[in-house]
Length: 222
Image (cartoon, rainbow, N blue to C red; front, side):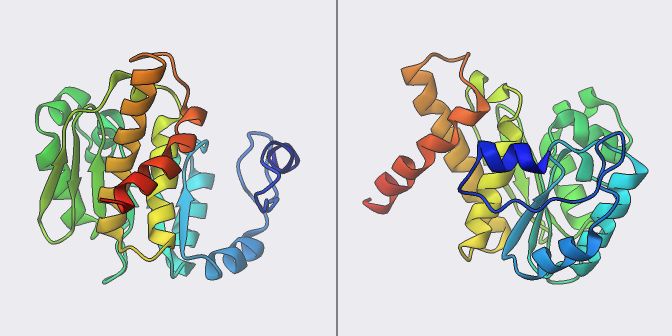
């Protein structure tokens, strides 16, 4: 995967790690430790399967990293707890939140804010239950709600883009909650712009990041 990524995104620094036949990272943990030590923020989970191999990697990263960790998809572990004073950011959709809670998806969809609050405190983390309306809870028991997401943001990979945006804000110095709030807001704003130009559905996740610089520039002028 690493060579293909390096060719697809030549401006990125790509670190190749050993993998098994299922594409799971099994070697190179020392290199990963060194990379995490040099990071201000990191995203773990997109494209990763929920497995014991992934869980071991996530737990290792959570124990070693001193940066803000944004956890999504395969990195969402029920047993994980953030260290005191260093909250993770978890970005589950309703189905993933249901898996974390051991409940069904309908229960989460009926009370997403309650689940966000409960797990933010349980996991000592910022939890975003994302959807058309996104519910963002901090470990201090405060709940934020963003309403009015566009249907097109339900496209595959959109949540991964959100995780990357949150990590980007954290890398620029925002605390975990502030990075999460800004990430959700800017992600939604990008979706609205694409909806106006392309249509409410049909745009791709890879088109979202190109909208971000203009949004941030306009916000900085207000």
